[in-house]
Structure formats: C-alpha cells, structure tokens
Length: 222
Image (cartoon, rainbow, N blue to C red; front, side, top):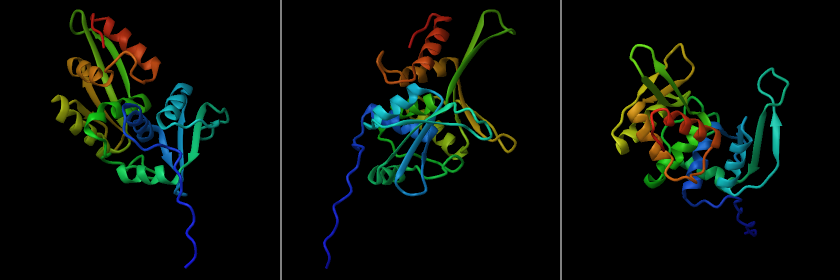
C-alpha cells in the first residue's frame, strides 16, 4: 500500500463568528463556486466589500478587475482563492456552483443569522424612502432583499419571521427575473436594528450612512 499524501490544508479557518457569518452572506449574494471544486470567487463594484470579504475569511490576496457582459470597461473588483476544504464546507451549508436561481436554505447557526443577513443585504439588498403625497408628512421607507431564487427569498422571510414576527411581502414572478422581499417602516426599523447591532458592526459603510440619514428624517437611529 502506497504512502498517503499530506492532508490538504485550508486557507480559511472555519469557525463561526459574526464576521465569518457576514462573509457567508456576501458569498450567497455575490460569490461564486467554480465548477473545478476548489476556487472561491467574489465579485463586486465596491472595493470596500472586497476588503470585507477578505477580512471575513482571513484572505489577503490579489484583487483583480473584470468587465461585465459586452462592456469592455472593467468596473468590477474580483477576489479569488483556492481552498478545497472551505469549498466543501460551503457546499455542506447550502451553496453550490451556478447557484443564482436554485439556492435555497443556508445552514447558519441561530446566533449568527442576522450577521449573515447583513452580509446578504450589503451584497444584494437596498433601502429606499420617499414622502407619500397622499398623506401629509408621511415618510415611507423600505428594507429590501433581492434574489433570483424564490426558494431562497422564502427561506429568508421564514427565518426573519421566526425571530422578529414580521412578514414583509414578496414581489416578482414569471415576467421578472428576480424576487424582492420588502419590509416597510416599523418592520423595516426593527429589522435594521437587528442587523446593525453595534456602532462597529462590519458593514458596507455607504449603505449604513444612507440608512442613518434616512432614519434621521423621522428622528430615529439604528
């Protein structure tokens, strides 16, 4: 019997923490598992998100640039690394190659769910607000999660309801290529405070600042 080769060593320390869970949220939103079974790729227009992604998993590698579709301008930043053990771990919790339309539940420890959700929000979510002209001084604001997979967006809705007893509502369908889960006003505020637990919560700062400005309109804070 021949000698066995050395066991593969992972670059990523697989240990749950708020930062690690946040990184998993980024992976679910804007990450990709290569079909080769070893490469993990994360793409974003925000260099800050690339930096947060690398910090979440303890990766300090080259950051590339790429274009999208027929566009020649390289507007996107790319972080890529090889780690077979971490790749297999991501498969075990619910990620897969070409996940966009088929991803469903993700196995996140309960205490880290909102850290994960913030990563997902920073990757693919948004907030928006406006004054409703139908009512005097009626300021409306929404927190939105987006996914091409209905199963995944339904899972998020279920998990949020289990913890905060708020339902939100889902839009999208056959003629729309993605689904949106929206939370309005009081529910939105409750959800935002669950995600942004401290002043130094790891997050995409431009989104946090936008939220803080939005809430200041109604004299509220995170």
